[in-house]
Length: 293
Ligand code: TA6
Image (cartoon, rainbow, N blue to C red; front, side, top):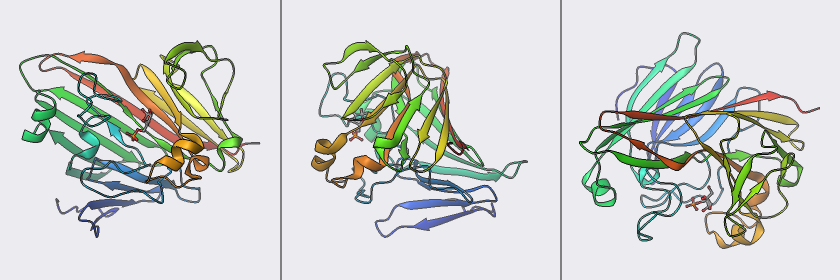
């Protein structure tokens, strides 16, 4: 773990051996584990937590932390050919290198973490790669996940920045920006449907929206706020809430945990091909922008 001479950044070793990077600057506080380069908290000073973290999250080397912003990579969902391989790929199960921490000109803090192939990753996915995750903590949380193909053959990557948003109560939430957009409904046999109006959540929802606008808004009546969600390098947005039955079946979720979270994910699904020497960048940015009326 590099010694950071960045005044806004400290590093803690957690009881379970994970390293946690803490950012505290004039704009916001943010927490990032090197396990999975997993953001578990982002809160602008004077505002409420933007990210949901399960109170039952498990901090284990072979487990993704429940909540926060898991990095799904180099595949989204179940492995397309081998169900023994970890769902959502291995990036969120890997220990990333903490490369740098720098104060930006505007006072925000830039954190960079990196990951490249290892014996473990090559056994799961036979390609050489360099991943760089750039996190800028300011009034906006800005995320950029860039992969460079450092090998000799082209590969296909899919994935998502699988962001769990903290909501007051799922019954009082609307997601705007998807009217008329086609989506695959994974709760209904992956049938393709079309969204009409705002997305409201009244049952288990697991949908892959295709090529929606790069921006959407999460309106939270209970917390009296609107969160602006932007993205780049993404061809889909995944919206997920497990609802009660699934919530009760997941040991790292409390029975009622589904009421306080909604996943709105910058997706790269379907995947894209990356040729040798080429790169692809997937980004998401989050900002509490308006007090709901
Ligand atoms: O993004 C939605 C989804 O693919 C759901 O199908 C559900 O599996 C969720 O991700 C969580 O996956 P995880 O492997 O973190 O339990």
